[in-house]
Image (tube, rainbow, N blue to C red; front, side, top):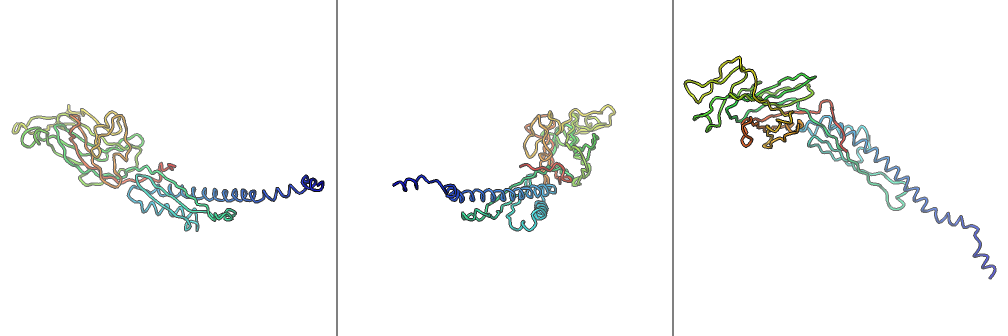
Length: 320
């Protein structure tokens, strides 16, 4: 009995046994840490590659050239990942001024395969925003009505200097009578440069649209007089006293921006809408101005067609 009790009390070799029992979980935790570190490093590498690719694609994205943006993004991925680019799945999308690059792949494990985990899945995502600036524009005049003279201009500003790049004007012709669209008023359209001419907007710091209104139906330097031969007809005669407009409406003026309707929607007063709300890059957009008589029925309709680009990658940035 004494020998049995001594055996039970004997603690020699306990440390070795305990260590042996703990060795497997210790090795497992160490292996897990190593595999996690490898996966983290691989994920960081893929994320950096995705970020660079998204920025590269966005720097050339114009809103209508997604294929070119994708080619540039994939070229950057290839440059950053090398042969590893062929071992990952790449998903590319470009729309609404945004370029998205999603990469999914995996890294082989060193220790976790003992637990039948041969690979750790890795997925990264990068989105870059490419604020687009119109580089060319074209006015396509539509229906125009009213008694007032109206002139819509596209204006660029560079170093504080404003330059009118193109105009469409409406001069009153008939205020009443059979040629007046039931008293709504009809007139003559004039466009500078001529219809269907593409306007090169050049380099600029700011761009806005404006409509200038003169209530007598005639442009600056002219005044209204009734036609003796037809009282319904508007005559505009030279006048040195006619030197200013009655109303100027601008898209960069929060107090008057709401006089413009874009695609049938009235712009919100108190705002200064970004250019992508005023121009449909790569396509046409319907505009309609109200000249001040009432907002239920606009008077000056036209389409504007624009081409855009992110100039030299200007303002391109990651959004996530």
